[in-house]
Length: 104
Image (cartoon, rainbow, N blue to C red; front, side):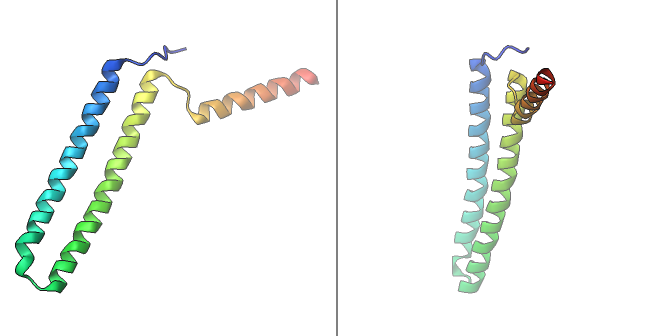
C-alpha cells in the first residue's frame, strides 16, 4: 500500500499552479475588456454582441480550466496513493461477497 502522507512541497506546487492559471485567466479577460472599451464608440448592438462573445469565451475557458484542474487533482491524489470512490466500491463488493460465501 502506498504511503498516504502528503508532501507539503506538492501542496505548494499545486497552489502555485492554480495561482498561475488564475493569473492567465485574469490577463485574458483584461485584454478582452480592453477591446470592449476601445469599442465604446461603437453601437449599443455591437457592444452587446461583444459582451455576449466575451461571456461565451469566459464560460468555455472556465469549463476548460475546471477540467484541467480536476484532472490535476486526480493526478495528485493518484500520486498520493489515495483510494478513489470506485476503489472503495470494489472493496465493499468484495467484502460483501466474502461474507456471503462465509455464511454458506
